[in-house]
Image (cartoon, rainbow, N blue to C red):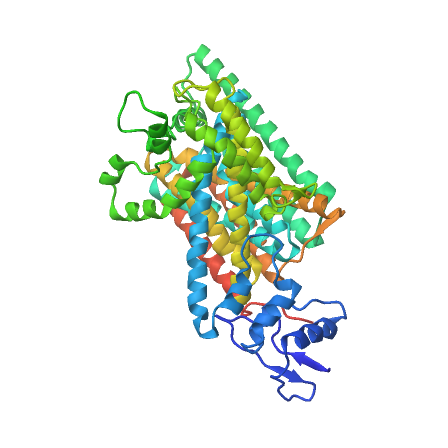
Length: 585
């Protein structure tokens, strides 16, 4: 069947608008069915091409469901829900706006799940692990705590890199978050509280970040990341950690010498001492304060369990505004589910957050969550010897272990091996984050099909904004509280971990999973180069302008960064919709 499809792959639009299929003679052929079009598309390009899922919007509404179900490009390898099938098979065409609205609300709720899990369960357990391993604050800050703060970005990148069709989401999200943080967040901090930046930490972090961007820029140019290249990403991050440790040692040596000679501290030393003070205050934060019981005294096992599973603090509830109450109501189901499944160890509390009935219950539920969320539950339903599924074996073993723990411990004192619950909580919360990140990636890809947007645009906008909004509010709060140097340093220090570990580990896992020698990258044309160039220009602008200001950052510098990001978004949208394009020779 000879024919051609107009505006097949990258035609921009606001919703699924039927396109026009024409035969070679120019006559319309609206009667082509889904299975015919898949065969037609596969043979019409080079004999091996797979029909792009975005072509579903060019079919008649009656054929879209069959196209989505039959086309392998429309299927997601991970996740629990098939969003494209839900849009085109379970919603009538006239209710497409309603389906998109529901998906957007579910996407926002998934971002809420990511934020709550990372802040209240993932990060505290990582902090407890670093405390038990007796790591210094600087080493823990650039390793475990950086992993905790960047967990949504890292897991989103790992999920996106696992599928070549969504690799653009990972690149767009990591680069887009980099542009967002180094312009909007850094500029907002400077506008809220102008300050003098610490010179050597700033130059160190921005130099490493520019090296990471250069590595990714080169990989995009070569259109592949080899095993050696992925290991190079991780090796560069290890070198960054070593550099931070050496800089800390040099700083401590200089401070001791200045104290001996009674010399006043330099601005950088003051900023480091300020960071130590805030770091100690952050590490001593009582994560269990929200769940502390109102009444003191001897409590029964049932009372301890009920109070430990109560995510609502009535004292705080009475003093909160209406918006905070609505947000708390939205978080209640998530917090209750996480309290039930994720143990949290707090070394700063006398009882280390030991709740005997709840912790024993978590010994049964947490391993069950592990096997049911790993690879979307594939391993959990596998039957051992054709008799019992894995999840049933896990429940039996967990129940036996919980029974022994319950009768061998008391409500008042944590057991000697209580610190092991931090590792269990770390694994469980990590898989919760991974499961939510998988759904986020699948929803964004579905929205890209409906709106005919590239994965790169979705990554640098929705995914980057969703994953970075928590860090932005945290940095703005620090700036308002009088710690702008620490917040500004976090803008450049945190995203180094995200891009190096996100790209390096994501590609390394894909190479190991597919037994391949490299990961092929398929950048979305000019758009990826606009994104990479914008990130490089923002870093060069800060590298040049900050020293020229003698590291005294003003509101003008912040406004220039905000203007840069607005210009960047305009250029990205004009490029996506074909207004800006490369002329073909």
